[in-house]
Image 1 (cartoon, rainbow, N blue to C red):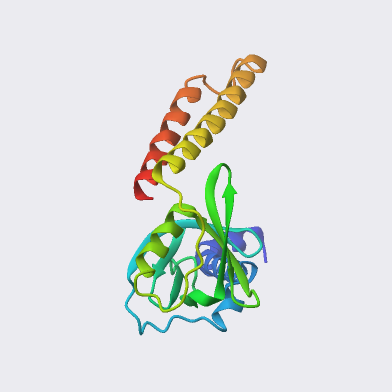
Image 2: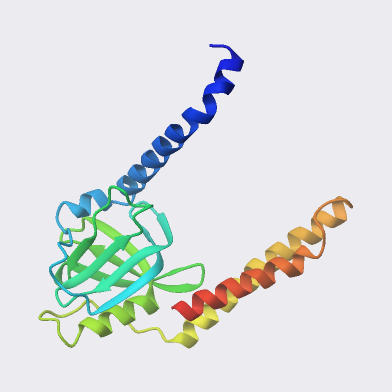
Length: 213
């Protein structure tokens, strides 16, 4: 096939190529996160009404697979519900893990207080989420749960705000230093105004994230 023929066919073939690559990426996400292993045992059949829904949550699963802003967490009387936006989880079914098959321990991620959950006994997977979100889920289920809930010391909003401020200062400082060094070494490099615009944009994004937490 000549180069001209390839160019003629490319607009028609690209959508199929893109869909195929996206399906492969979502499959690998389910595999590396341990989701496929978990859904063999803990599928949410939708028979129970959640006591609390938390949408657009961030966390990590399995082999450090980051799930930023696409997690859906639910507190049920019987357990923890875990879902993912369908566009990122075409093959992943919603999960519901019983409370008595979850172990929780304090953790952190880039200064932010987190909770690491061992899912299953013996563990079939792991999930790391915001400690603040975990506190809300446990508080919603505790009055009605029939088994003791895995708990960790609660994290208040002030602690989360301090952690996010430190995170913002570190990122802004590193980015500002990069822009400064770039402008000194290459006069036609990045404009120095970026050292103000990007941290400001990041600050607004983190304020929105804090408000949603």
